[in-house]
Amino acid sequence: MQLLRALLILLLAAGFVPPAPAQQPPTTTAAPADVASAPADASKNSSGLATKLLKPGNGTEHPAKDELVVVEFTGWTSDGKMFDSTQEHGGPHSLTLSRVLPGLSEGIQMMVVGETRRLWIPQALAFNGKEGKPAGQLTFDVTLLDMPLRAPSDVKAPPEDATQTKSGIYYKVLHPGTGQRHPKKIDEVVVQYTGWTTDGKMFDSSYTRGQAMSLPLDRVIAGWAEGIQLMVEGEKARLWIPEKLAYKGKNAPYGMLVFDIELIRIR
Image 1 (cartoon, rainbow, N blue to C red):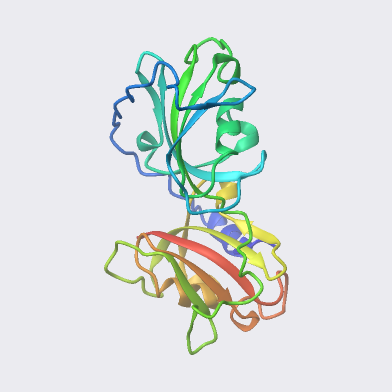
Image 2 (image 1 turned 120 degrees about the horizontal axis):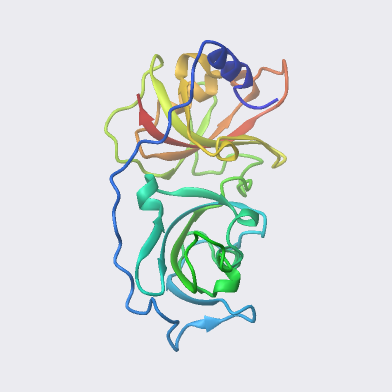
């Protein structure tokens, strides 16, 4: 059973519709000086894809060919015209690599989390002359932010640097937030999340739905309500929630549950 399934059914039955992403004013990012062709210090794959590392990452693992990833990117045609950017869509975007341009997928598979890389994608690995789409070579700057469905290495048990609350939840900040206030139990919050059982099996994720979820804290499992109230907007944290504060052994998923949660907004 997926996390909060019963809650979502109840809310949908009452006419609840998850909020659409906020519309942001369009922005234009200037094309790099080498947009027209890959420079001499770029590396070239046998497929024809050329890449150049712009900023090293802090991860050690590479995405699989069918992995869901979170990225920021901007794309230009070879004459320097920007045709797409995550900035135009409100920020980072989740992509399944088996469903994107072949050259974009190939390039992202070379990356680790935290890395920024420039890709020069030949037409054959881009839109391949498809009518109405950008033609010719395309150039992308891509930052790989996360592989959110992968179980963390500490999924089996909280590490020593995790903080335990009085109730028994363990909590670890993965990325500090920018907000100043904490949500209250009566608040509704907008979040992205993934949940795993302690054997590393992912049982639910907002990323697989393609959008953040808006949820009232007084209608979620007790461990969620407590953990999210510790957070501020913009923060990403990992929670280890004991069974007594999750589904209490009444239904699956059983046992301690582990969640990565990003608090996007307090409504």
